[in-house]
Image (cartoon, rainbow, N blue to C red; front, side, top):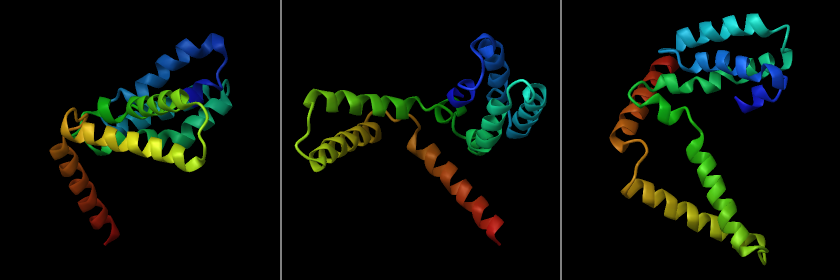
Length: 147
């Protein structure tokens, strides 16, 4: 969404954002693709770069529809990734200058291990059982498509 909005004039951002949000609020992938197609036709002459960016990344941004058993609000957001990156920056700023690249890698690796253990044991964002079921369903679908 940010990449698309970077190619839209400031005056038009609010209206265009509301139109874009409708794509990801649809109940299923087919209707989301239809809404995206209509939006692309409506704005392709006014914002060609933004529409090109939308078309290039649309399929990737709609992947959460392939996992109906997991709450789409949880897997369609990049908040978790952004939080991890912010935490890494915060921890590395405390050190300031690292003596070598290996020390930086060790610090980040230890933080990521601690973070993943915390999520596995205490506060899982997506319950492990739902994730296992979703991955099994996805693997079965892939096996059928291969044969």
